[in-house]
Length: 185
Image (cartoon, rainbow, N blue to C red; front, side, top):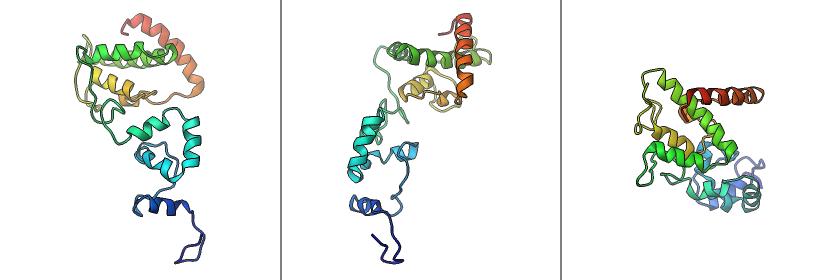
């Protein structure tokens, strides 16, 4: 296809986006895995069904993301999260950790132990509060839950960054020792 205005070739994907009802400002061709792009996953299978079939076969959670990206609540934990009745945020966090495979659970426990120790040394000697804001303004078990519910593997919501791969194995050994000493989680 060629543009009527310039006579230059263009991507036919824009025609499909137009047919799906997108405005010019909503039409964007890029990888679908960023936070902003996730909002448009619901449309991906309509515009590119062949590619979408390959994506869901290869990427765990892609279909779930497409179904629930517009929702809030425990599904993605973007703005609102809820805990089950008869649970505190701490007990809900522990329940989530215990439901994970050992490798993932240990990874999260390492991060949470550092989070708890950091705040223990900075004004929370008896532990962090159970409830609190979901942003980074104050520590709480509710924030810990948000990271777990969002599957925030590197715990960016708890102010962590991603490790370099070589340093990560060393970090895991160190954290195993520290968690035993700290007896926090």
